[in-house]
Length: 357
Ligand code: COI
Image (cartoon, rainbow, N blue to C red):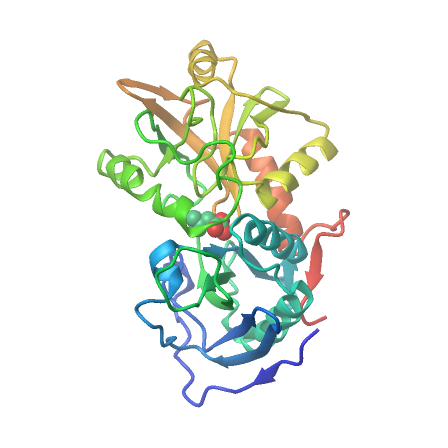
């Protein structure tokens, strides 16, 4: 593990007075963690610095060829004031998998975790107190070489920034409306759909914008070959409930292996529900919703937590799922997951890492 140099900011920002108005990813704390990589030298110069701009050459490779990957995790404040992280090692391990696919170097996961812990201890007062709020953590890795030849960069930068957040969707835990995208696709097998690379999100922006103008919160992506099988919603994995059975698209290389997805599948089984990972035909989902066999649908993600889906629309068809409100199962899984994350429930799976106990 690398030594981490700390330089404190001399101009601390005002902390948000109203935690009901945090929104998502609009405010950033006073410091950030940065470390650099160079071929032959490895990761070096790990440091915590005042939050600020990077000087970038306009020919920096990340700006042209998009070697950029990121993660999303959260720090939670327990009722006794102590802070804790949820499965941070899994996020850093996933970042290394993303890096490998994108031709980038494996992360120094131990230094990244130690840097994150030290950064949060410095920024502890930024972790909000209100129920449902948290400190969102955004680790990112970008290529830094200057030049226009398309090849792997020799230099990379890894950084972590922090943002106090409330709910990702303006609806909070109220059900969101989702549009099933039938023109564009997000990813194909053999591509980079399973990585958390910036390009996957760039590819989703146009469709998301069009859906938003029609009054939907997000789009649901279908597979890139037949445009028939459910993939994911970009900001979350999708789950569908048939009574006590939860079904979700299986990991096929083109969807993100969500850490919240994995946690919810494990918790659901521990609570006695059946879980199935399979190919899900969107036309069957619509038919099952109409016949009442499909009882609930919800998305899972770090930012979105559990987000019930009240309405699904595709072309001219629009269906309401369940009674359009938050379902019993979604609520139960939300309460269980957030209960563990905020320290109200015991962590029987070893997912919690205390920051300052
Ligand atoms: C997360 O849930 O942390 C993500 O990275 C999704 C992003 C679209 C906010």
